[in-house]
Length: 489
Image: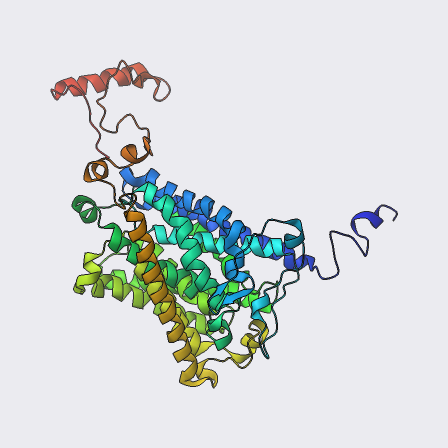
């Protein structure tokens, strides 16, 4: 019993009265799950879903965006998004590095206004800084999907911190940190607007200014490893439990509902997308299934903890069909969409799905769950007495996010373009990773190299009779009049 007085005493400096250990443990776990979505989830997904010659560059763009975001976030970004009010859409910049700041109870001071209480989670500021950083980082990583396969890596290195400070923090403060959209009652439970609509619109805008890939890459950009692509997508799906489950800032009822709804919507959307592929193209597409999974996850995000689970099924059906239509049908009929080379169709899978989810949340959000989750009083979906007004707020909030991201992204890229080229030169685009980094993804002897029995000892292949195999290989080659074997990947 004497030993228990140390770690489990009633009063400890490391366990103040306001600290809820369960909430803190879950929030740190949720932050880690969201981090795994980027590292290694999207790094693996990007490195495998692109053409082989772009595997290293694509993975590195995601890796760099994640790392660069963290330093910017703790230096000034976090408090611009969640600190004291400077403008109706922006917080005051400040560092989040000192012990006095990080060890105190988390508090979003700008969320207090009139009848709306201030948001104060039961854990330290350091936990909130980490959790929100993971959201900021994954937004930039998602944006990168629009410009893979041609953006100058130096331009990308300059773009990531500027976009985080000048674009992401505005959306985060306006909708989450206590800005004008937050107090007006625009609902964005976990980032349908702040993260997905922003990354989709900004990515599409960046793709316009950077320019297209080579014609040969646009016509044929097959994944270099579909199995790894599925693995990366699986990490995204499983990590979304932290993405939506951590949004209430507590291990509460809303978190449980959100995690269940997230999985239901993702599964429904994947099946819907796959069925549409079979109906219209005669066979299921694995890439399409991953895209359907993604749209289901994105579409439920604005209201994951605010709608009933039967509504999550409806959201999943819309998520698997509307973005499918815009990508497969509308895209081919729109001159603008055809002109802009959005490499991984981030506009369809994130901007369209995020906007759709925001509108559906305005229809389906329940008063009971909103009372649990949202400190803004009186919110409810249109089907529960909120009327068309709530849908109008959702559309107005989306319009602000779209306009801000399109304008600010354009200004940032135009400024960077005055210093370094936004797009790699064509001669480097022909080569890919080796030209950009001096490295290649796969060191395989058969990648264009001729077979040489003196260098590649096939006698070691298999057990028993290996030398005989070597002879038979050489006999077959000589019988065909061939001097070597070239394997084209």
